[in-house]
Image (cartoon, rainbow, N blue to C red; front, side):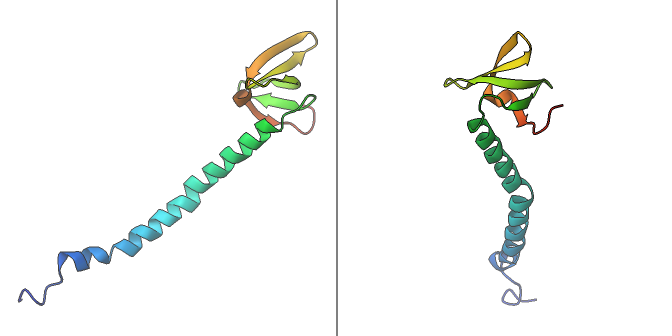
Length: 99
């Protein structure tokens, strides 16, 4: 074979570029984008916490929000007379019905 008949290295590599782009887009839509969406929903939930909300913490405690403080913490009422300060990030979700 002559040198002119063989495809150059750039031509052979350029055929892989579309495949790489397709797999990159698939990875974005299947893993990165949903994670960013969950993070945004979590931040929105933390921003909208208010007194009286029933929440679940990362430690597994169900509690009622007693007070939301400006410094990034919440006071949670675990039981009658038991109030504990948590970071807002410790609140996993707002519970709709009582557990």
